[in-house]
Image (cartoon, rainbow, N blue to C red; front, top):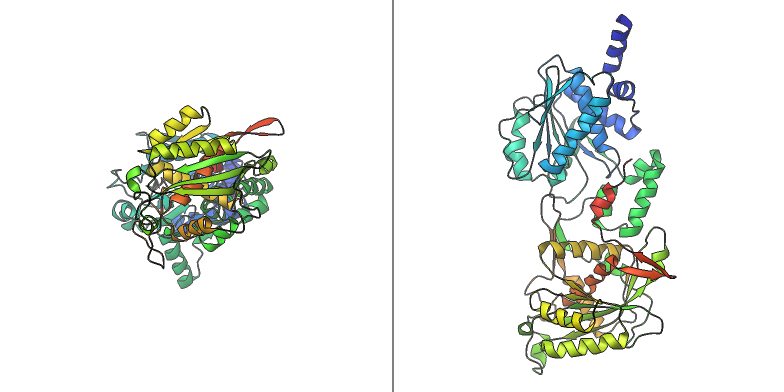
Length: 504
């Protein structure tokens, strides 16, 4: 018995030994330093504030549960209180509790010692961990984090919520604080705490910041490198989700959506066409303006300078060659022709679009069916059954369309014709004027477009109708396309969910 006691004491001296010998898990090198630094700060009441930024699906959540199990065990003889806050109760706090419970159930030392109380508290002896939601409406005032305060996915917890309700939990005890998460914008809680932790490191030389990239993880887990390579091929290395979720690079919370580097990716090598080519597959992308949104036809320069948008048509060739790429598995959209109508009655628009659709023998028409566009899109569907995809804009769908369009561009799957023309020059000017802002919180909604009333250097109003029309190509990613006689479908998925499906 004394030998067993000595062995237990030995593994309790080091969090990594504890995890290896009681959970049967050998921590990776990039996890070891984090585990030891956090445990040391808690044990010796150093009150440090750590920031841990791991790429998505690289073992952050498993590491959290193992550290929590170790501290609950080691400090089980004293009144130890740990608080863990996640952005939402369901699913994030519930998932965090399930992970901890799984570790507790499989840990040979404590599997019969732990208890659960009140649905959100886990304890071993006198040591307890409380799970809370950090959502804006959550009432969590009054809890105390005596030894450790964890904020998981801290980039999604509002700064105001943390400062008012969460930070005071650790104030009276100077508890260790750990902010876990992945990079996002520079105005998040995680970004703020990252800057503060870096400043503290400079003052005393003690490491508080652990920022890893996919390349760091891939050196220890080659399969992870292959997984990330697939995501990069699908979305492009410069896509905001790739930069933040895998390479720990902050993005601006607002600014120009189409910088020069992104516009360069949009330049193709094909020529403009005014009529279809033999054996090619085409689609129409149509952003519809209301009849009242344009000036009356035939008023000359007033039409060009109106504040109102035009109805914009972008004709794309659907190049299926990239469907056969094992990593990309999605079409390339090559712009062949575009046309604008300003102030045109919908009855006339209907006739012109229908005639063009038959001329080009299009396979799909993605049509803005929002508001007054619903009528025109319905007429087109009736004339071209099974070919019209009606897209209705709202805050959520426009945000998702924006993210999806960036994925098409950044993966090299959107190409403009060369040389350009007047319509394309107008398109580039709209891209240059297009702004975005990302709303704070877990939803990651992006508001994007050309601000109302914006003018170019010539004093003319700048619109975003051509951008909206072009962006609708991303909707085609969800359609079934035939490659060599085989029907393939590109599933339109949330890139975050796609990233979360693997475990390493």
